[in-house]
Length: 312
Ligand SMILES: [Zn+2]
Image 1 (cartoon, protein in one colour):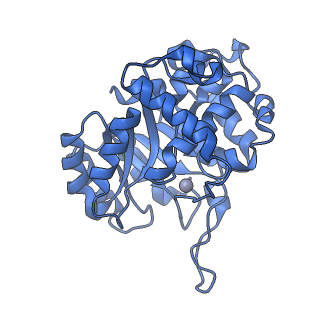
Image 2 (cartoon, helix red, strand yellow):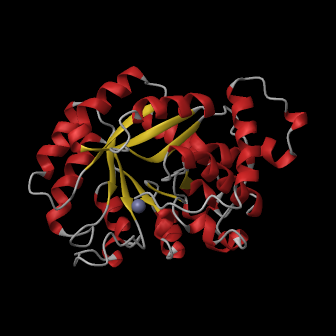
């Protein structure tokens, strides 16, 4: 779910990042004019793949607005689409193949969830997400048929992990963050090896569990969307202790591009509305700088890994 955060304090750095992005997107970047860390943080091919863009039902011009932003900053959006909008987004993905990859949002507890998944597949969808607000833990047997189908399709499935917003304080709601803890993804990834499992929000606040599950499971990745990069903005280097195994290859788990950096288990996700994507890009860049993430790994995180998995 979009976790809207105040833009205060980010405008300056976001502005600098936007300039850098739009320059490189136009192919006329002038690195000597950019601060060094901005230049080195730019993905080599300039393209960003965002695993976490929610379709905005409230904006009738959403597709047009998304296409505009995506063109400007050289972005591919994995567009998380509610079932009623499935045909509209399937068409949009055909119209904007460089900018939209369609993902189906389903409620795992819906009685017709399997039929919905099949419909999404028939329309050319590439995965599911964001799965969230589940009534039982993700590993509950009743959800297995969905995972089996997604595994058969070789899909990417994105799960919300960790703390979740409260939609109402007046009405009772059957929602609990523990059902969406990052460690549940371990069992799903192991039982369904053709799936690519993405955990949104890196298990916030259980980053250690998220990282360790990702370390052992080549088909597990996490995004850092949500409040984490804001909460941790003054202590981002702590992630070096959590993603600790860079260059220590004794586990021999496969990584994209055989990258030995532990941070290769992260992918870019914004989860922030169209006007918030660039702010999250600059937050990822601050994170890269604080954790000394190699330039080649940055490029994979910002788009290379998802481009490989989705073959785009
Ligand atoms: Zn979420």
